Image (tube, rainbow, N blue to C red; front, side):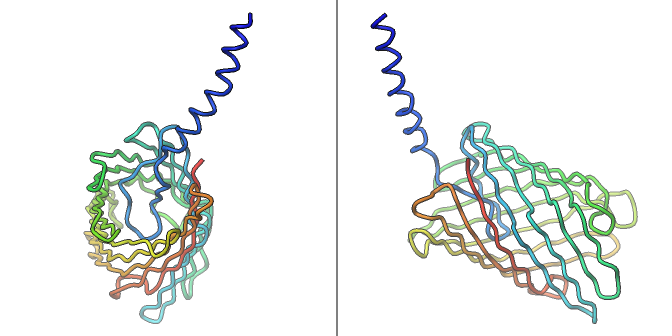
Length: 263
């Protein structure tokens, strides 16, 4: 009997110690924000990560028409399945669009299901991220079509603590006027660097080419972002950023703030 109690006592000390060491081995929190680029890192196995676009506001004025689009509490929930795979669900509970001369459209947004698979790790990391959009948005906020695509997030560690991210993407989108599909392409190239032990800055160039048959759309933006991970809480990230349109097809300015937390 004494041996049983001794074994239980030993386990009561050993298990928390092992768990603590496992926690110590967690990768730093790595979120797909700020900026538009996607990181190749995945969530640690058995952990959840919630990334929230708390407030996201886009403003544009073109041809005498002013458009404002707001997104609130858009959330990407991730779960780490293993060392190389996480599954994700993006939910937008409320968004609103106001266009000069038209009634406002507001309500629930589309759902997006994603899976990120790490292909190569280390200083030259590569992942693949297929996704599918589920049409749950209300009238005036979505096109009611199932659409999807794939991203190939890539990150390189450069001298001086600089990280280079390259994110090519190809999507299959529904035509505006028919049930056919067309291709759209995106590319984000960004640099990030720690500014202090807790604060990281990022700058990015983003472009897209949408081959919509009724009129091709060319967009480009220059994006800036800041991410702060408190020294005393490495499971938390706060961020903010702005995206500045570089041509007439791109909204003039987009501002956002967000938060990410790993559990």
